[in-house]
Image (cartoon, rainbow, N blue to C red):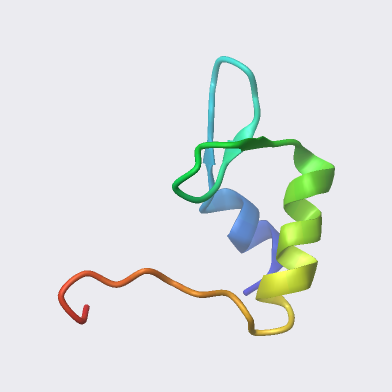
Length: 54
């Protein structure tokens, strides 16, 4: 997944402009989101939650 695809698929709070990623609801700015992408998505370490095996 490219950076652009990843960024486009992460919810961005329209009020504050921060990206909301994960269940803790912590907001991330562009630089912080890029670190998540580089650390987990590019390396293949990203875990996707599944519901009922889907």
